[in-house]
Image 1 (cartoon, rainbow, N blue to C red):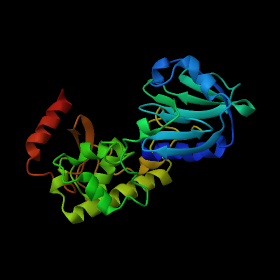
Image 2: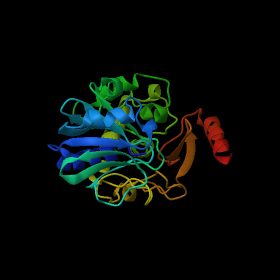
Image 3: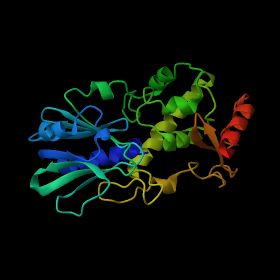
Image 4: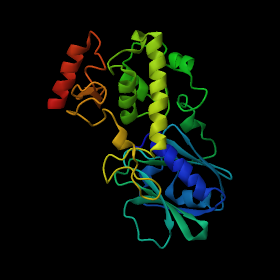
Length: 289
């Protein structure tokens, strides 16, 4: 699933090609991708609206139109393309916006889990999200407050978009490894120094992901606006590196299941909490099924 760095890459690239242009309409081949709009009304609603800005909020792409907000969540397999309308048809582009100058904004989504919203007020979608981890306002006290001394495990807590916006499985695993924290640790177990390390790790891992234009785990996965793969996959320390040596200490990277999510750890750099042996045994049994 595209996470903060991938969506940020799209937002920056789309801002270069969409701002100032006008939407002429839309066509929809998979109505389930429109939770708040009907296919018939969508094209008429956006027709004539100019693109004022393109940004990102969490994992959402946010396009400010003249009157409305166009919000896109890429989910598992979504990609975006701006191509000439005469370009070969894309069988997986189930929502397509027509643009002036003979182009189209195509939402390519083979698995059809992505969502598209056109709303007068974005708050019902974006309002519940937590703080942006790359904003200057996201400091150590903010992270401490968001963790709130909770007894929840770190991995599910950091995946919760109402706690911190934009992080997903890849970058949570990488941040926890960078901070030297086990995903089964609970938030209330962190010392102040560990909260500081986690904050620094979150910011540095996400910033590197943005600089490397996202993570592409397969040729069929994430690609940027021009169809190029990201480069972060070559810099990942633990994610999907099960059985390989830890780049910091050389121990063998292991895969667990935490909160139903495949999770990658270095058992030496990320010391498991005292209760973890039973929890990890359950996780390994889940992997075997």
